[in-house]
Length: 128
Image (tube, rainbow, N blue to C red; front, side, top):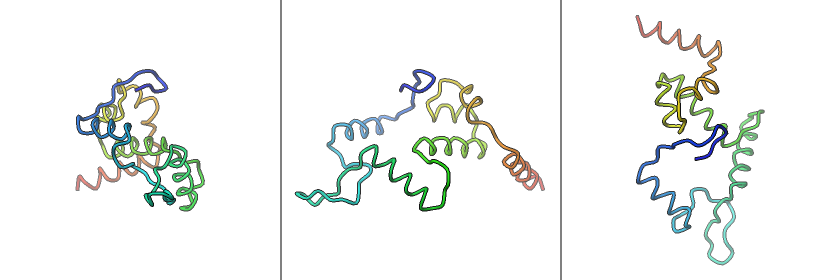
C-alpha cells in the first residue's frame, strides 16, 4: 500500500484478500449502499467513494460534531483508542500497516494531559 511516507506492508488475511478481490470485480454485494434504488432492478445502488465521504460528513454534522470528519478520522481515532487501551505500539503499527513503531510515535501517540490523567487514575484504582 502506498502511504504518505512511502510503501508499507498491510497485514491482510487470505479470507479478507478474497473478499476484497471479489468486491473489486463487482461479483459480491457492495459494502455500502445508498438510499436510492436502481429503477430497473429495484436494488439499492452502491455508494461511490464520494458518497461514503458525504455520508460520514452528514453523520458528523447531524450528531453535533463541529470538526471535519473523514474516513481517515476513523483511522486516527482507532489508533488512539488502541494506544489508550494499552495495546503495544508494535502491535498497533502492525495493524495499521506501518513499517515501524516510529510512525506511531511521531504521529499518533500524542496523549494529552487529560488522557494521561485518566490512565493514571485507572491504574491507581486497579492497584487497590
